[in-house]
Length: 82
Image 1: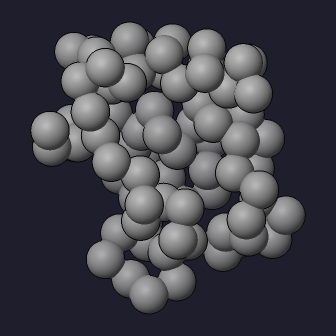
Image 2: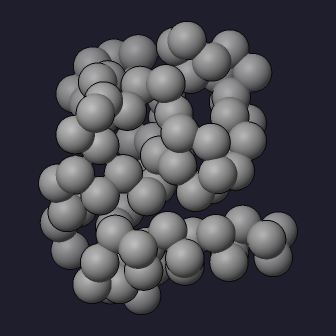
């Protein structure tokens, strides 16, 4: 599945423990990544400084659902289980 442009759920819902440019200690769950622009697009997409954890994320229907809200809800639930 292709990511839905403007979704941003994977940049908001999960915690990220690795360093992100502008967020040297990563980010907590539910906090918007500083690299997510106003259109919910990654400012680092395609750049070498994009964190490996972000590169490894693969959108899938079970996780992302059919809407951005479903994606946020699903990722938030998984985050709470870990």
